[in-house]
Image 1 (cartoon, rainbow, N blue to C red):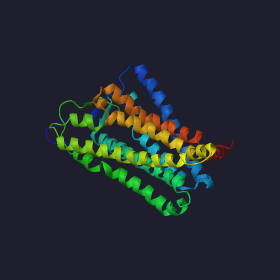
Image 2: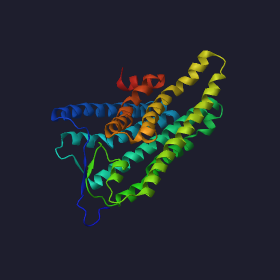
Image 3: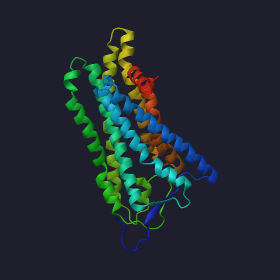
Length: 307
């Protein structure tokens, strides 16, 4: 699968987090707990939306899909990371590496698109409240959800296929806890400037188009909220957006530090920490953000837990 005759690489070594054996076991326990809490938190949101009829609205349907996405996003990295902590060789197969590469980036792309349509939903609800039911119909909601999944899984498909067909030689060590395009391209036998440029362009478009759409939506939302005569009305209108803005800030803040900022060529240690934040920590705290800031979700959660 992309390894030409004469090359001996049948897999890669993911260095992960270098520390003592005791440290590796502690990290295994820590990330096992984080993974389980992430599954429980996001799974609870999905169940709450499914069981509570009052949450069968576009806003919560988007949120349930987003939580489902977060479960698979964290699953694309953490199980392999956990196995790596207990492994002596830390080897990931060639096909396993590119499958992780594909699913990690596809799910991350889908997350960008979901954040954008969730901002669009809030814009319609606040800026076009009378037209909201006729615009955001069940049909449109379904189309938006399906479009996010399809776009996300096709966005990086061609570059990933091309990179997987390249030949790799020399060291097979990747100083990361996942298969990332930068280290992979560095291991290729020949430079591939076209692929590097294509990957960089697709990453930039993926980040900036949804981000600018989100910022534009919330600029219009803020302008509409400030026109509300009462302070209580302003708080009520903007409270529905606070959770989403917090999630957008956490995700985009860390991703842009990683891929867009001048320090994106920073040392491997910093790359690991930033990647860990947006791929593992953010999915963990998103359910907390949405549950704490939303009365309907808190009520549904209490109902689900029988409290």
